[in-house]
Length: 137
Ligand code: HEC
Image (cartoon, rainbow, N blue to C red; front, side, top):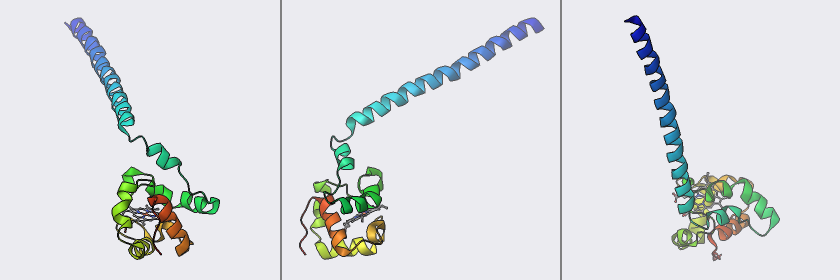
């Protein structure tokens, strides 16, 4: 009796071991498939958004250290650099409002866009770069 029990227990253990391994393998496959799909569905211009930099090297450096952190990250909720559609209604508010929201902050947008040393001119140039629009001044 005890022998049979031991045998069953051993078998049970093997089965129990196998299930998680299979489950993990299946989950890994699913996760892999899901990731693949997400990549395929990502907008074609997202890597271009991340790669784009202002032409002026000094401005590009400022951009890399501040605006870029959020304005190339879809999860940040910020209008993305180069996404003219997302920027259009914001640009339509006018330069004064844009500048006010940039300097003082606006919802998820931190004051000065985290570039404390930026001048108004630099901020305007950065907004023009990200929005692809020329701002009236
Ligand atoms: C910590 C993240 C973060 C950083 C860094 C950041 N932004 Fe933003 N920004 C946001 C978010 C989020 C919004 C969208 C706010 C909203 O409409 O809810 C935004 C919106 C804006 C807007 C539009 C405001 C409006 O009135 O619609 C401008 C202009 C802007 N950012 C400029 C900049 C500039 C210039 C820099 C760099 C100097 C910068 N941002 C850095 C997160 C950031």
